[in-house]
Image 1 (cartoon, rainbow, N blue to C red):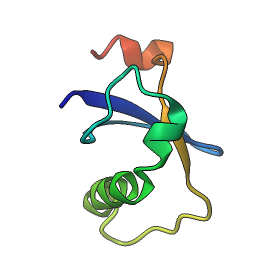
Image 2: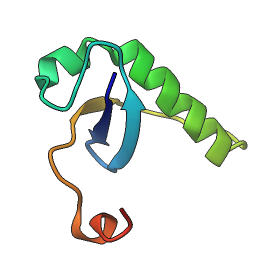
Image 3: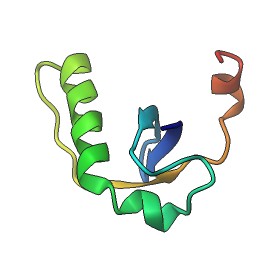
Image 4: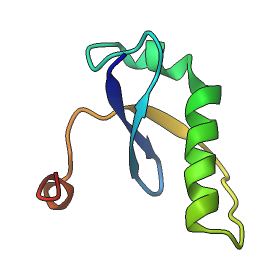
Length: 76
């Protein structure tokens, strides 16, 4: 199982590496989006660690991230 990189949008973008069974970096966005429950649970777990006071998510969209932003690429 390979790690894939997820990009979440629309108003703010988060990048997240996650292993999803049966999905690899060559998968289609549609295939990845079928794993919404698993991806959202991991995203929510990480947010709870970062913001123990709480948070609210109005909308949630995601897809495979096809490239890092310039400032994030330097950190790899």
